[in-house]
Amino acid sequence: MKRLAILGSTGSVGSACLEIAESFPDEFQIVAVAAGRNLDRLRQQMAHHRPTLVSVAEAEAALTLAAEYPDTRWVAGEDGLLDVARCE
Image (cartoon, rainbow, N blue to C red; front, side):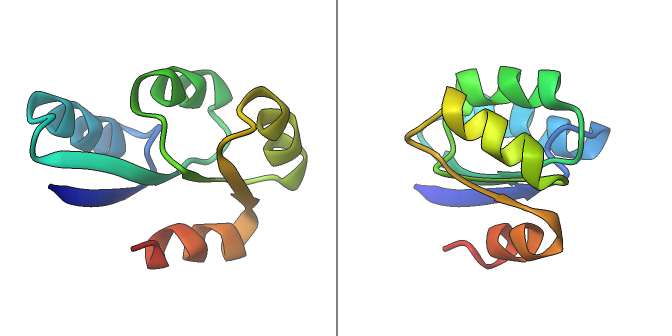
């Protein structure tokens, strides 16, 4: 199984990547995503994929979401984006 990190998961290209991964559940696991500020769409993605690492644009949003999803590691800003990009 290939483990995937999706940058820009709430945008059109990132959402399309997630849809493709959904079509092959035995081949792909979403382990990390980076989103900007579209928290509603991110929540939908969280419900379906449950990545273990998530980056958002703003630290305040990361704190709010961490309370909703305590089993997920939340990061923010440019450093958070880099954490997702480096995720293995």
